[in-house]
Image (cartoon, rainbow, N blue to C red):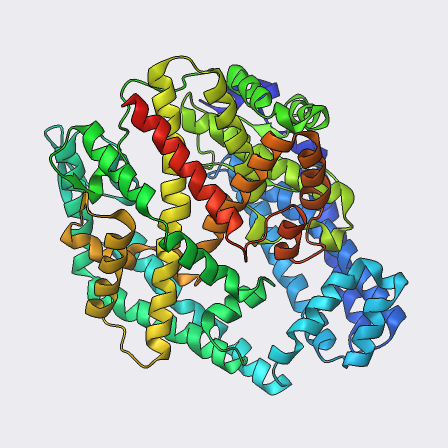
Length: 591
């Protein structure tokens, strides 16, 4: 479908940011002239009023930059081949990099302020908006090095990022994918086609794709292994250089999350895997297979069931499913539709996938590529969860505190998915659709809570091995990964020999200790949804005030604690895993 064939109500209203590219261009020129204004405060941040003026200048310039960047980003994503959109996007990125250069003095200068000055700033009512920022500066001071040492680490950033770049080139450009037979035709395997094949109902095709993928990985395995080992060494080096006891401590500290949260997740989930093993046994039974292979975990065990709804019906279903959130939330959902926050349908050369992007002082924008599938119905709820989280945060918080941490970024979106699924189950009478929805929920847990925790445990193990002086080789890494695969999936799965190499093709491992946030995000969302459905309006009010409106005004751990989710305790993990076990029992009754 071409973009000009789409009904206007189904296209996002970018003119809410700028009326047109001409207005954008005028603001670009003006802002380009204004950016150096921040330099007037260089060397002056030890004076309270200069600090305040600097922060206000920084906020003002960043808000304007955000609008320029967002408009260009959205226009570029409407049509990736449009030269006009691509040019705006490139210019916006260039302007942002210029400003980063101008403002690069701010955080190092704040880090050099003495504790007396920082404490005075933190306690000053006139600087209230910057209290959390200043508290974070004071908290991290002990890990800030001397000026010369910081300069040397900064000079190494390109080298440090090189491991991820090498992986990307190997994974996306140089991976020697073989051709596989699909319906009598030889087709070159790719990452995208691999995912499609694993969802196929044809077990022979699933095996061909699996074997083909790991044939390709095996051909470059030694290079991937050496590259990953170097990346782990880099993580440990940077942690040691900054005075941390371990790389995981450095990572969690950068989010202001207690380090024990990471180990609590790994330990608590790792000790309670019996329901996952039961699910594998059930999958084997439902597929009628003598053996359940690793390539059999993505195919649906429920045939001839899906949600094939037109978008308007799907959107209405989402609104009904989120009704426990109350009238205000429901009206915001309808406002998002009425006021064209969303770009609904796939069009020629439009960016694939889905996302939500906030624009402070305007409203969020949501990219969809809707087709009539259950996944896309849940995607509506998911992305609107992000959008309304951003809406509430931006409405409540000043600019400096409006952006929430990545640690909590997936919570609101997943709360919406859980509420929608619970609603659908409460209304669905068709047995096959009930089985489909139960499986959908179980696979959400399997892939997000259990699989990501397995990844997190592998990352912890690989970094500990390297820190202890044990060499990270293809053999040692594969041995540890296979142990974890057997631990998490249990005895009813054939742990195909090639699966021991799976660690070598996980991109997130080059952003160390990131994947656990998916698992804690789902855990938190299940607890919050549970509270909303059992406590009603009290829990909704708490969730809105303490979480959705909090933005980045406190540490993400404290924000979750305020809404009743303490990730240092067993409770939220136990609730999540009990939810998985109950859902599994319901599916077992129907199969």
